[in-house]
Length: 241
Ligand code: MN
Image (cartoon, rainbow, N blue to C red; front, side, top):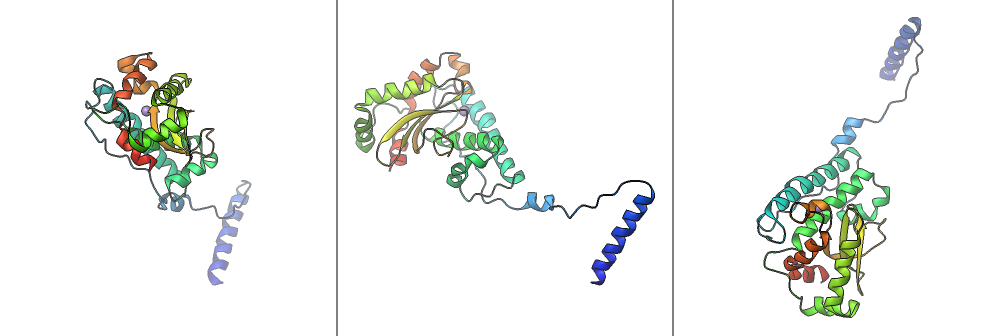
């Protein structure tokens, strides 16, 4: 009581002093402590996976300089920026899955950089040197069941990448029963509640110009044709299981 009375008196005195000086005084209710909010530990942060191969390992299909810039500049920036959003915007989801399921409520910065962070972590894993070819086992069975043949799948997936206008991604996803092919704009992905294409990604292809322009310039179709030689089907099988 004593302390609150003292506070009241101090405030009143201050207000009186200011009023005396002719300044209109508006007393505000206590505002939220922003510093406390900002320093609160977020539920999770995105982490950049280590590149599972050297920058030049995917040559000649993806050149070393493109890999270096793509990983160290583009991807690193998405990770840094989404984590900044999580902290500053007090985003409190407990997992990546939860984060993307609530994309409609996120700022554009959190959405774009969260997608960029996750999509590239996924993308690096589904590529490997000396890979490609035709998948076997359950991946081939699932592809055949959903698209008729591996060749038809490859054609349809390539087209999804070629026809994505501007920047974006081509995806192969599973809904638990069948596989689907589609594409997303910018850094959106099929885990996002706002995405037209929904499902669990099992293969992804980055068709942003930054992924191929140094080597292929405007020839996105050539990049995609070459990219099939580095698809890591073992990882696709792991994602499908
Ligand atoms: Mn990219």
